[in-house]
Image (cartoon, rainbow, N blue to C red; front, side, top):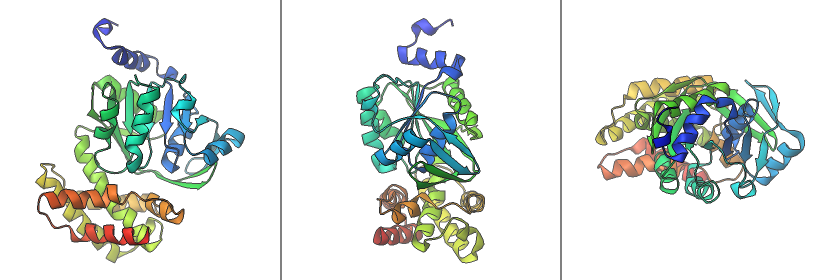
Length: 324
């Protein structure tokens, strides 16, 4: 292990964990549909602490977490409602899977309890999450993972894995290195998320934002599952317009993306997760706050700064605001 002596304690811990991956301790902060799916699958292979709402955590503590659909298992991760309940856990990697509007609060809680987390991974919708995380955890390597796997929260203790999708991982902020990326890819693939490492994760974040800016609000407004988009030529044209508007906006910021490519990825996602209820529709059905501000709203604001018109993205944004 030549060279570790010159590394920071946090970096050294990353290197040690990479050499002995089965000993990695993993926390998943935000036990909604995707966080629960990830945490449940990871708990089959690693020590996992799942952090979420009391009712869901209580059900898991009592009966385990049942995952149905593409994945069939009953998982028994450790659970709590706040890192403050488990200051002794000391994770090597923390996945933040909260709603984007809760990113700052999640990062603050983590920093106050586990101040030396080697790696923090944002597995969220929206743009700018990694920078928010790094503002609280400046010594951590902050990675971003984007996935189009479909997951639905059925009830406390039950999750539906509704569809398999594409998963992309990249470095966003803080100390970087291939070993860190490979360690997290190992974790994700052990959980069944076949993962690509991106050479330009910011570009991929914009592409994922385009996918979300179509599928989430359309399904929320229509109160339909994702497959409605794949079955409708009219809705596909709405998706195409969103992709064109996103391309113009991203190009203004020096990010090269192709509208046709985003369109194809969006339709493929809708087809592969046809039976999934989008996270935005799940939120509306449950009477919860949606992420429309962090998805379509953020695109509208970024476009406005550059004097770009995004009427379709904005119309979807306004419609979801009205019904949520």
